[in-house]
Length: 316
Length: 317
Picture 1 (tube, chains in turn cyan, orange):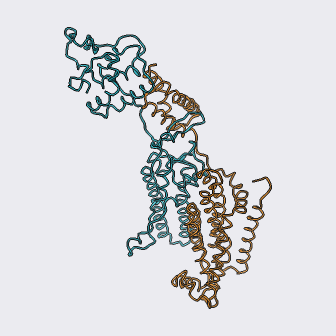
Picture 2 (cartoon, chains in turn yellow, cyan):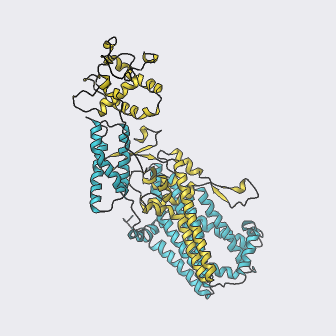
Picture 3 (cartoon, rainbow over the protein chains, first blue to last red):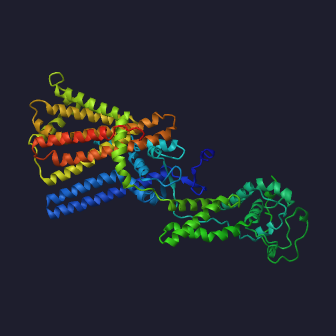
């Protein structure tokens, strides 16, 4: 499935329920902040421990207590430095604190949650992914060459070149990092324009919408809010021009409105045969044969016309 | 089919699933969660048949994904399998793995060669100085000249340091194994530098030489073997990328990683044992034959581990 959409960053996962659902893969610019957060976190924990240790040593003046504390601190440093990620990902189901904050999660490539073994492999191999280190001494001879800074070029290249955006550790462990958003909303395109229902009632009853057209309509209705009115008409006209002919609508009808009406007809209108409340629009017809006919007498406040009144209405 | 009504009808259940994704506590909630999850899966499967708008489908993908990762938890470490990993898988893997053999030959060969070159003062007078540097050699002489003493507190903190430092080097060597060359470099560098130090300190008349030999006897077997083992595990990882044996490159890497981890676990345990030996036995003013006995015993344990436990048994692999 991923081969079909190589440019996309979504990956399909088939669950034990035999349902295929999609995850969004996390690229390097989502993962680096998460990693930096993790490093900062455990560095702070260690710094805090060192401060407590100095405090204890200063007040107790006991060398033994200091040594035991130093032992614990060094072992903790070792464990946190090498196994923080593995432990977090195992016990928090694929997330470290940084990943939790950035909305990421590690899962197996087959969609199952990762095992402790996989978490260990991918976190141990991080050293190789952070290679090669760039020593500051390479650029300035006054700086001690020991100050090596990881450039992470190996991991970056691996992420860029693999289909699932895996670094070497991910490849070896068979895992991938996906976006695991904490909040989401059910998008419902609202239709509050009274003209839409009115226009929809003129769409012939024998018109059956194809699945691709339905998808297009839904996509249009969702994206519509981000377009300017002129742009909406420009986009919609390609689809509505054949329909205007087919429905025998007047040629200057607003393509945007027609798309929206079709959307309403497809997804929102009830199955009932009751005609919509036309209100002020009663008597106005978008059909071509009614072009010369007068409006119904006394439409109280003049409603916004069904056809946009600019010169763009005619096919251009 | 009126989609709006359908979505309206299902929406309450989806919202309920959404809240349950935040946390399932009671058994009733867990059962409810499972039912809602299955319903959402079905909705997602039918979404295209219902011609649901793409936004709703995206929403369902995220909902099912979130619920899926809530329902299926990560498989944690199972302590029951650790025994098998350490005492069954690891020794057999080590015994039969050519990468471990190559790493061991490379490490101990270079170590012996370097030690000989450093020891032979007449033929190679400046070898040790060239390899490890005059400053390091003088520092070693100074630190071992006064003999071994120290208090218990010092031992404890040094043991901690050895765990962090030496095991860290081993794990780094393992991780770099996937890139092959850095791993081989770390292995050879350590072999040559350690060999040069050993050879230099073993020369006649070097101040602190006897103390040095007494110091390294006890933890030597564990520590040197552990370095070779972690490099062997790393090489196994890196070879997986090149020798695919008919599998895809990624599949081969995964399979080799699973083989490499038991070796690395064994190496890490040896590093820990070495660190405690180096922290408590090596620097102690213990009677020297006792330290030598410890070294002989640890070598024996390693031999038993590699050969007796590791000897391939028919049909078990």
